[in-house]
Figure (cartoon, one colour):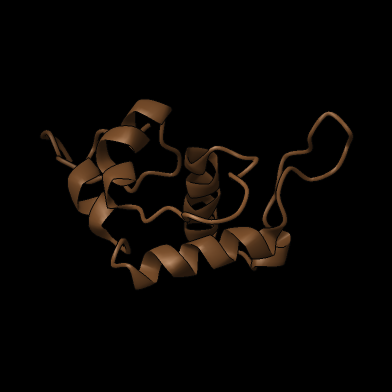
Length: 102
């Protein structure tokens, strides 16, 4: 098989710049309550990881903070994904990213 194939890449992780350019303008952020302790792009990368791996939410490998605790609970990531999906974010970032993600 020779020739140059053009593959569309499904992103598994976005940089902060890619997140701010392609995804952040489409997100609805909460107006009440304390600000999130984790940046939104890290939460979004966890969502991409679950979609890529196809694992259960409980089995998502979440990094640990300085105290040795998980930096966020998997249910919080799931709730944010459901909120963003209800707002119509589902799939729009994949169309725009194409092969630009790492």
